[in-house]
Amino acid sequence: MRKNSFFIFVCSCIPGAGEMYLNMMKKGITIMCIFWGIIAVGGFLNLPFLMFLLPVIWFYSFFETHNIKRLPEEQRLVMDHRFYQDLFGEGVTGAKARSFLDRRHKYIGIGCIILGVYMILNNFYNAYWRIVAEYIPGLDEFIRFLPTLFVAVLIILVGVHMLRGGKKDGVSKTEQKEDYTEFGSQQ
Image (cartoon, rainbow, N blue to C red):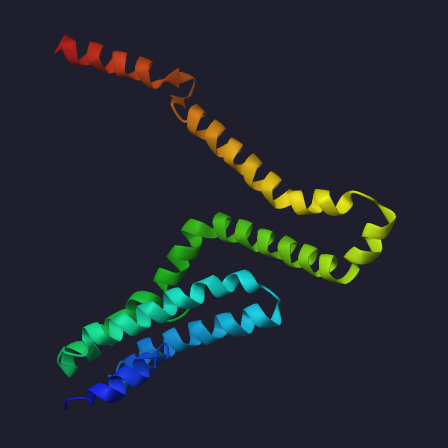
């Protein structure tokens, strides 16, 4: 059954609704939950930097709706089922989700720690900063400089890591290359 182009356009303006109108319920509900979940979490936990994700999700949903509207309904249903299987595997605790978490658990942990520290500092800053700043002159300028200092230290650490990346177990890449050419010339 052919869908009304006007309703496709109207629904595509709400993330996930366009996919749902095109009978891709699993994908539409997932996109809608992610979009509105980011708004809820960002507002409730006072994390405004999460809002940068909203335009990305909105544009993805809008353009995807218009890209798939000409596909036959059977193909859209297969795509919806494949999306759900790729996302959740055997369910939310499926093998794919466990594999993803097992491979990236350190990065997820570091992200959680950074997010928690940010939330504590942000709430402390908003609630008590005026009181503390009155007693310690110059602290306000130092705190405002901290993000720049953090990024500068991070850039330096990345640079050091990249410079040290050329060496493996105390052997530089040029020494490895020389060993390889000597081995190749013996044959």
